[in-house]
Length: 106
Image (tube, rainbow, N blue to C red; front, side):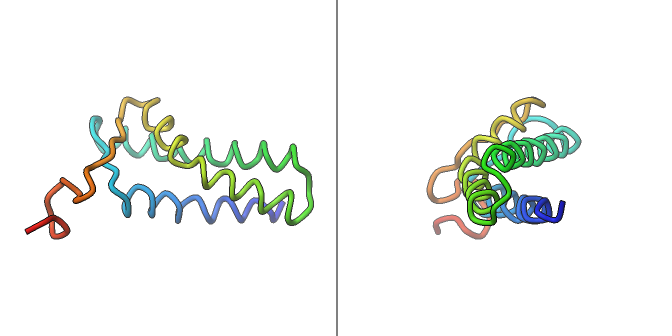
């Protein structure tokens, strides 16, 4: 049961880095729909991790590391699906950010 601490702890860091640190913009829907989309994304991540963990077994390398790496790699698709289910669209911004703010070109 302790092995679930790995994906539960990592998913919030991955979500913060992907949604807040990359050129991804959430459009459509209000705050509640975006929150529900985030919760669905976390649930999808944990479902993918749990399914892979169940299939691959209980060993440390095969049962923990491989499901974690695969779930991290497919996180963008899981986020797209989780937000799409509630009507919020994820879109990539241009390389310069395109959203204004301090990080844009001068």
